[in-house]
Amino acid sequence: MNRHASTTPYAFLTPAVVILGVFVVWTAIQVFALSFTRVDLFAPGGLWGDAEFVGLENFRRVLSSERFWWCLGNSFLYLLVTPVLMAVSLGAALVVTSGLRGLGPWMRALLFLPVVTPTIVAAIAWRVLFNENNGMLNSVLPGNVPWLSEYPWVLVTAATVTLWKGFGYYMMIFAAALLAVPKELEEAASIDGAGRVSVFWNVTLPSIKPVVVLVALISSISALKVFDELYVTVRGAPVASKTAVPLIYETAFEDGSFGAACAVGVSLFLVILIFSFVQLRLTRET
Image (cartoon, rainbow, N blue to C red; front, side):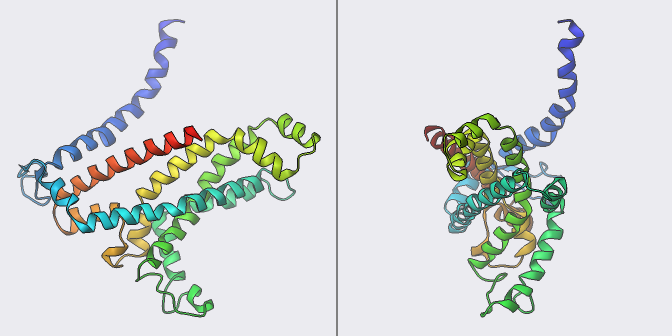
């Protein structure tokens, strides 16, 4: 291999590495450093101008706050949307890859449409549907459900938006995995007398297990980090309905405690890191 060929891959990777370094790694380092300071976000000297080192004081305040643990509990409660999201995505992928007449590329494009719809547009549309006074949903239900104002209905509302917005993305991942399963294996199982359900559970699903694990991990982390749906759809809901990421926003930009907000962010990062590690270990053992 000549020298030009060996350096070409690094040249293509350099822009992505630089962007990740500036906007992800450097930002994460600053957040970690600011979590040990008391800083006024709107001080004349800028973010670091009046920063005062306070050690672990921000973490002590955060971890002793009932509000933080309640919001973190809501984040894990929000994880209930993950198995539903995976089941709907896998079901849609099975349908679009089934080869049925009329379910061609246009169906995949239609089901993928929510993914490319801006979250704020989707959230506002769903907010209109869930309106408690004159929304379409309450007009067909026997009672008046407080979708936008009371716990835990606000989480159900936001989870519905997450489900509608995200299932098309995971459907495409599942569809690519299903199309890669060797047809010879499924045909051999069918010849041996296995039904469609048996072929799916014993041949197809084990073949796409790595993709299932990947989708479970990505969708779980996304659920723990949910912000847009809660911020737009159920904005103004009681504090008890918040999850951890909206708490970071409120602590930083409404309470003005930027150092404490960074401490919440670092704490959430560690929780997600431990959760992902445990999830991967359990998945590997099964």
